[in-house]
Length: 412
Ligand SMILES: Cc1cc2nc3c(=O)[nH]c(=O)nc-3n(C[C@H](O)[C@H](O)[C@H](O)COP(=O)(O)OP(=O)(O)OC[C@H]3O[C@@H](n4cnc5c(N)ncnc54)[C@H](O)[C@@H]3O)c2cc1C
Ligand SMILES: *[C@@H]1O[C@H](CO)[C@@H](O)[C@H](O)[C@H]1NC(C)=O
Ligand SMILES: *[C@@H]1O[C@H](CO)[C@@H](O)[C@H](O)[C@H]1NC(C)=O
Image (spheres, rainbow, N blue to C red):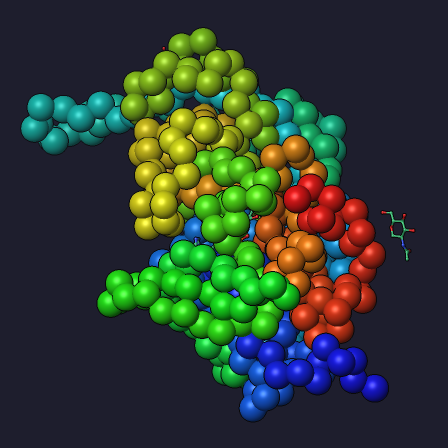
């Protein structure tokens, strides 16, 4: 008994090719009512797929994330997708441990480079602490969490284990979702949306500027899903979405599978490589996620110094903020201090102005759905959001979870 919503021919337009737009496209193509000959699904992406936070996030998934009305569904869907599409290989899906630790940072003087005299064994290195030397036992510190220096860790508490915590490589996951949706009939167009056009009865089309020709085009639409992350309010000003910049790095290092939330007490004589004296005061809290294939992702805190630019390719990365992260994690970990820095990057997090979020569902304008404001759990909550969006489109309502608390109409 197909609902009337599923019987009409649908032109579905998804605005934004981040993780939310791409999982939405994927789940639309998997909905039992979807027929590629009858319905059309188009992702309109301004720059390139996963060019914003969705390609630059950490990728942690956790049953202890929030909000609780979608977390268990999304965590389970991630595991199912990984099993179905070989996510372990394709997007680095794996389960891992998670904990938070406090540690004392140490100053490590960089190697003193001589004036060309490379003879003899005179290279001066700051003596590195031996990882296992004189380690005071720290209550609860797991044996295999061995990538922090000797006596730097002062306390540890477990936050999750492989039954409650997992990870994906967010860029690989997002682009895979776009590819799998495309193979099943969805279309990706590179173009920047300039307006969502309405008729009396609701949405009727979406107008965009094509990326290659800079020409304006209009796509007819029966259903529009607005999932432009932090840019959502640029397209639909009524949406109360804010943006916060965050920097991150990846470092080459072969370490045991843990995601670590840290609080580092920096020494008073701490100066980073950039010679910035304790920009952030005494305590800093970088996060470090081990990834498969010998890589660690580390990110710092957010800043609001530079407002969200017009598009993802114009996001400014402040190298000195990346260097801070590298110096901070290097002050407690030899593998991270010595590992080659692979990537330095920045992106913007989408959040809901008055707190809470995300906003998932109807807007009060017929045919216009919102899926945004996922703050720091958009990777974790992407699958549930995509699945629920496919239900709004084809079933007229959310079926897999009770998300009345995320209803955008409450804040629009
Ligand atoms: C440093 C950092 C670490 C994070 N770590 C994690 C983590 O470990 N786990 C987790 O669950 N979450 C994490 N997140 C959060 C997660 O990255 C975001 O919640 C998520 O990526 C948001 O996805 P999105 O699709 O809504 O937005 P975005 O990824 O920003 O995608 C929006 C897309 O819309 C496009 N767009 C913009 N304007 C237009 C327009 N006019 N027309 C067409 N397209 C347009 C953009 O180009 C962009 O591709 C982290 C975020 C940051 C910043
Ligand atoms: C920094 O201070 C610590 C003591 O707090 C000292 O042991 C160390 O040698 C100092 N390092 C540098 C480079 O000055
Ligand atoms: C859905 O959750 C809300 C609380 O967020 C609750 O008030 C409501 O009764 C729930 N609805 C159903 C159908 O369970």
